[in-house]
Image (cartoon, rainbow, N blue to C red; front, side):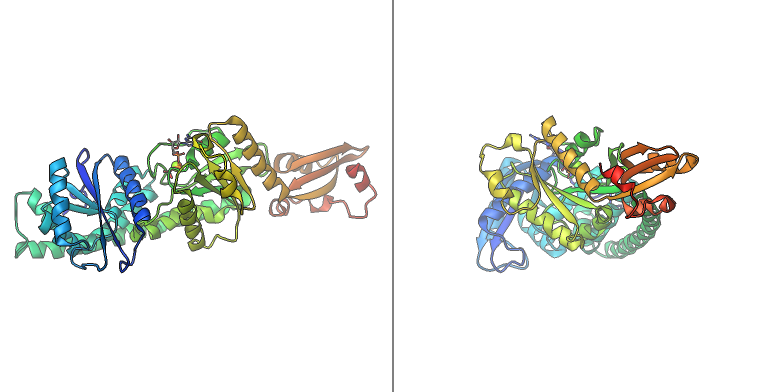
Length: 440
Ligand SMILES: Nc1nc2c(ncn2[C@@H]2O[C@H](COP(=O)(O)OP(=O)(O)OP(=O)(O)O)[C@@H](O)[C@H]2O)c(=O)[nH]1
Ligand SMILES: [Mg+2]
């Protein structure tokens, strides 16, 4: 069996199914369940699958075999067939046997939210690393579910059962998949090594801010506008699956870089969380976290919460953060931003469509980084041509005063850069009377 064999066919239609049950470990209120179903609808749209009717059942007790009750499933199956839905998409992770049992009752193809997200990720991955990570996640997801996937396949291929030869084949497939996972993992180790080298290089030569936040918040659009470049931004969930670096301001020294990252979503498949931590690790190197949030989304608070949870999980909660509330052009309630921004230390309300907003934010970020740099006062004799070039090329010159024998400089630069420039001998002593010149 090839993992590409099992795919949701594009252009098909699917019914959305969920449950409200307090004894379910992923229990959500009825309101949250409905919101999540709306998000699932968006995920299906992104994948190119038509979303049909939505169903959920309120239950006191779970049925571990089928989650929802048999009667309810039969009722959903009738509605699905009537509207032409071939799939039932469950908004939570199903086990292999649950999938099989539900399929037996409904006679419809059964998939879950995880599989939808995995499919979207697979469609959108661009770099080799992202592709491999998603392949690993897909295989890990498939491994315990092979049997039910096999039933689906054998039906597709003309009803070959799963007896005898089928069982052997299944075992063989499991082994092939495990081997593939191992192979991909070792490829990833190699890629991560070279990524680590690039990261070290960048850390020494640049300061970075990472754009992070819920999927579709507008991170890539913001990156495009702030850096005046073109990173793919689309009204699709998970348009960006790789970390992309761009220069925010080429005139500052060292250059300031922005990192665009993969979007977050609630209930990310557990197999993907691990894989994608690597992609998000580029945020680990950032000096500043810019959390982007679509304030026009009714669930913006939930989105912020999910983002904060992932920040905590990555152990980067100590980093300095600013929150950028985006899409203010879509807001109708003028009080909402006041409420949203009330308890936040540094926050902005912007629209990526407003040039003024973008300019203000860019200025804030640049000033933030400049404020973190240190002042150095230097005197460099004229004959030290090399030192003058280093100052001009690697530091932000705030002030210069020409003297008979050389130049006084006041520069701003992070100390880790200054220490490497070999200019320490030219630093003016704190008591040097010429310091007054630079202060004036
Ligand atoms: N109305 C409005 N739409 C915006 C604004 N900013 C971005 N968008 C739209 O929102 C959609 C998503 O934008 P992206 O920049 O792709 O979002 P993202 O956060 O990078 O999404 P992922 O890569 O999926 O995580 C696109 O259709 C953008 O055109 C804004 O300020 N106002
Ligand atoms: Mg993006």
